[in-house]
Amino acid sequence: MLSTLLTFTWNMPQGIEIGAFTLRFYSLLFALGFFVGYLIMKRIFQKENIPIEWLDSLLTYVVIATIIGARLGHVFFYEWAYYSQHPGEILKVWEGGLASHGAAIAIILALIIFSKRVSKKSVLWVLDRAVITIALAGCFIRLGNMANSEIYGAKANSAIETVYLKPAQNRIMNTFQGVEDVSFTKTNERFETEGINYPVYTMAVTFVPNAIEEYAKRSVDEQIPNYLRNMHIDNQTVLPKPDATSELINVNNAIVAQVQVLGVPRYPTQVIEALGYLLIFILLFTLFKKTNIRFAQGRIFGLFLLTVFGFRFFVEFYKANQVAFESYLQFNMGQNLSIPLVALGLFFIFKPNHVKPETVKK
Image 1 (cartoon, rainbow, N blue to C red):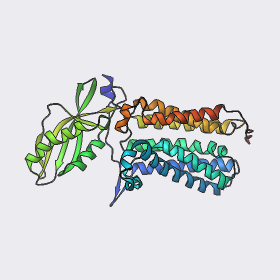
Image 2 (image 1 turned 135 degrees about the vertical axis):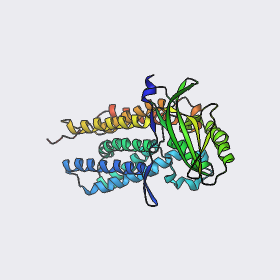
Image 3 (image 1 turned 90 degrees about the vertical axis):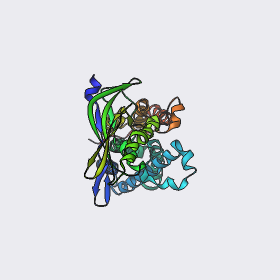
Image 4 (image 1 turned 30 degrees about the vertical axis):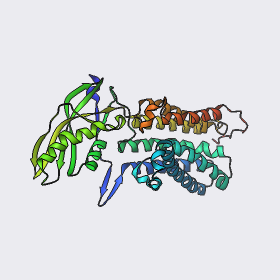
């Protein structure tokens, strides 16, 4: 079948090790998004004879708001039950947990402050320009999510399915003592169950030297499969193959247990979102740049909210739920948070024009 030919295995490293330091691709793409956005805003400011010194302040406001807002959005929207009992962990941004809706709210508030304290221009004037580059930053951030093998899609039987192996590798190595390495090799087999056609992989679990064979076999035949099977359905990226048994081999005095497992095929929603945000950036920048008369203030901002969060609402149908309670909601949290932002976007697009558009200098 077509999906068999187009199954894509994603097991890329999440960063580059430089001595004791690891440069994570997510961090690199996050920074790159804001850097490219800075260059674009600089071009806009120069063309409109806006003081360039405002730009450094604008970048500072947006970056700080993005990090704080995204973190607090995740804390309050997705995992307040946990963080309310562990408030000290709210500051551990490096452990993951960012929400784009929280970032959007915080950025809007930060730009209101920027307009009052720095630019002295209307809030909508600032928002119309800033959201162009924010859409592009969203593209880079979603590619960073792909690099991290996170925020992936729901289970898929399609021609664009992707199997994310890195989460299973990391979880096994961090959970089971004595495991030194975990690797996967794709086979030509498929295994169908409950309507999903799973690709089959050979998982090789390498144990530390002098590990006991009985412990290694019990871990791979019982403990690791039970661990993978009992994970919440939206967090499963690898499943044990029914009736599969391990084979022990000795490699350089280390025990390696090989066993067949099922890779969970999922929609690559990070890439889909990244492409969508790139197209939205092109649309907003083109409208801003090419029109003979600027849109009335707020129109670009409104179009940003409508397209970004309208698209986000649609893509969420193909995403795995990020937290378990979303399974009980008619729409998941990302969709519920997108609805008011889409409505706000429609308001600014269709509101009466009380601000005279600015003429573009040719």
